[in-house]
Image 1: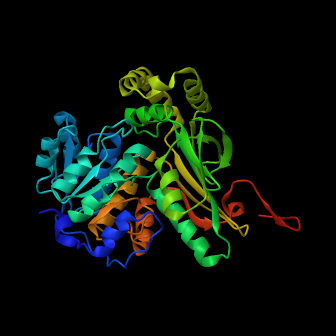
Image 2: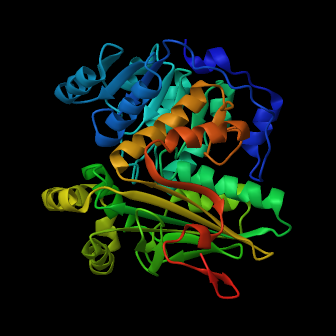
Image 3: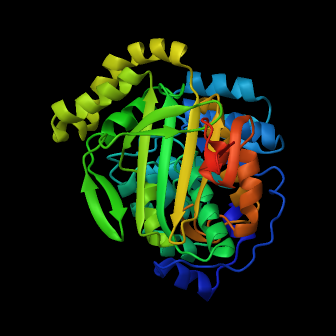
Length: 427
């Protein structure tokens, strides 16, 4: 029997919560130690993100039994050999429901890292998890997929299955950071949160390989959805560049608009009138290349997964070579502005994305195993997904190895250039 069937109970309040779209509060959740010897399948575990997640889970909870799910036996057994005795490989085809349901038999939780999620036709893995009563987590970074998953909230609740979508580093940790900024502003200030901005930076592909490259190209084929004073607006992808200070270890970087799911979910769930997300990379000429692709290639081309895979095969050797020089530093900056003039931010920076994404995803997985998540399908910023009292532990786990991690500070305290705080005083 899956963990979700053992550890969670469903009440009428949960069914109502699934149906509501306004901000919600949840009953206090008692956090538990993860079930000993729980079996966790990392689907896509032979890839960079999945392999990193499995390694982080093994380090954080050595007693967990890890199942590496994928198609390539050779790669699968190579991962298992690195992880050690508490791991095994299972051959799984994510496009085949029977294969998925068979693989999930006897598994307590599935962590879905087998992207890219863009242009996926269905939420096969989530539906299989609900069918087999298996707790679920994904690292989706696609708006359409994320809200398709969210539409299965009632179905998951009826099956007593706890599930979180968009639960990696960004989106994921970034959503929790944003939610905590909003919560602090409402608690400490007199003004209302009005503007929230996500800024992301990753050097090269962050060592995460061709899947990240494919995701980036596919996003260039989507109109950017943002919100301005409550109004939904559509903008050109990789446009409206800004030079943003990511603080210690990263410095100032150029970032550009992209269509990311946390923009819509934060707007709808937390009720923030103005929300947007921007992303940038290095070396600087990759930003120029991304902008050129957006302007020169037809939108239909960039939305065709088969054509994008051809582009990935063409560019991947070049990108990997330059990645060796660029490194894989990653940074998240979340800015919140309120009606009373309050401006606070959070920053999360790490030297290696391939490591950081693993700890971030593992932090969410452990939160689910510890009983933080109610039955249903949730975004990370929802208290039914990550209980308020579980967020500090989640962020501590995710922040392992960071070179800079700050929450709820004014910009002048964390930006790299000295700022005048008044009367000619600089800090």
